[in-house]
Length: 296
Image (cartoon, rainbow, N blue to C red; front, side, top):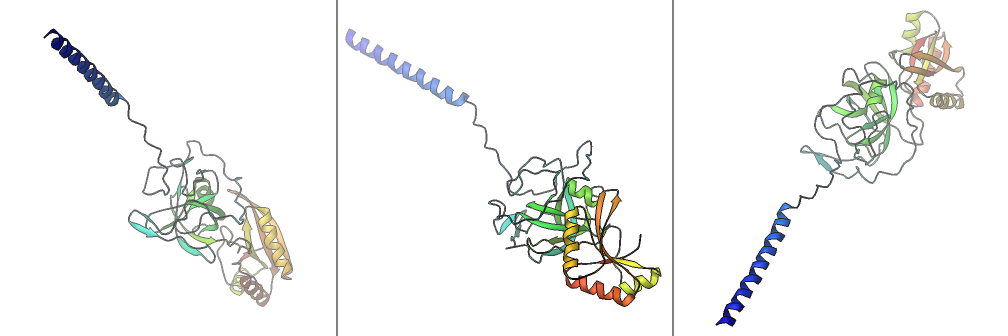
């Protein structure tokens, strides 16, 4: 009898110890803090979010434009098709021949330092942009159709996913193009085919006009302006192409604007309307959109 009681006591003690240990393990599991969730890096910027520029706007007039060069496709951001906000988009096989007009917007501090769709950190002070369909990376010339300003940007992100908007500019690019203050502006986006001469943009503040009509209206010699560039090497490249085509009287000059120094490529002066029209047609065949400007 005594042995049975002792055995029962031992069993109860053992059971109690197991129960206590089990409770301790249970409490340990319940009290352990949850594991921190893995960081989620958005592949695509979707939706309108509060954004803006830096508190103290820097001088971006000397930020260089990117020089177009052949680059391999980014490992990320080129999956096609992809869907954002219920819409499906297809990435173009290349940017060759791509030209589009529509609204440009911009993005700044909200995304500065975060990953772009190509997994490059977004730098709002660099000349970059986001586009829904062009391969990443690509180079495009963006021209503000409201003021004539133009520059090259490198496309390394996806967006903007809003009706009517065709490109999202970095903060610096928006400042240089005059888009920043309004938030949006009508632009032309023209893809640059690396390895081929880039057509020159229209000069800032000048409107295209027919050669003979312009000459008659001004009543004095005029020049044909083939382009105006932020970078001198781009202007020299265009001037050389004109000279290689045996076009005479090609000039390079500089003009200081509120947004920095512009390097202009001009041909002339012209007093004969017929010669003026021939030159306009010839540079047009070379892929350049020229304008007629008076002699300074």
